[in-house]
Length: 372
Picture (tube, rainbow, N blue to C red):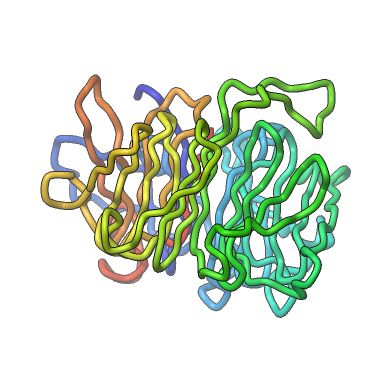
């Protein structure tokens, strides 16, 4: 297949199946392996088989899966309510394996002060984790020997926060942190400090934040800092129950759209695709915000979206040859991609694609991660 991209889905009470691709021909009614697990991996539209039983259960549900940095290709981090795991997906030719990783990093997960959410790769080898009491900026995060996490304290006057999402600008290493109780924050990789974005979602509950880095950006001599044109800023989006906040790369100013207007319902997930289009997930549909500021609605009628109640969205990285975007829902997952110039969809629902104890159980996709 053209433009291959591996994807990891975290699902509630899901199982693993033998690889069965989505084709135009009817699927044969033949037996297939159904070993219980909570992770499924797809290469384009074909599930990869036999991951086996993972060392956690539905009592500790998955909160986040996020891809590893370029220094550890083909790996995925899994964050549950009380632990963090490093999952070697086997994409690079090795055997799949999963290792408890919060103990390697020396961090606490869950509880009153432990890590609750995380971001995708931070610069070349790191990751960013957000806890109730601090931001943890980790380097060499996939290395058992070199991994180290720096604790960045919260701004003065804030004893704790409830982080819901973290997004990273891959050019600068800056981060944006969405919270449920204190609005939106910015971590400066230069000053190594966190500051609230005053006037942007002040004390507004936010559920998601997304960043699209300015392009191109080049690496400096430091492994910690990347360089780019000073005039170039990342596009940033943050949203919640009442508003979608937007900052373009050219205007350097924030604006917002009310939920219930151009945005159909409360924001559940945000993702920029490789063309800079913002995907806004909600319980009704997916709203697309194009780079020229126009909105488009993807739904079942006319848009091809197989299911509503969006839980998570992820898109291929700008460096990937794929132009696919994946949408997680409470009733399976969907993949939107281009075949020549035509838009096509794959829909992954039911025992053939998300095997579980029954056709309707285990179809709730809780998190997605694209592995370039």
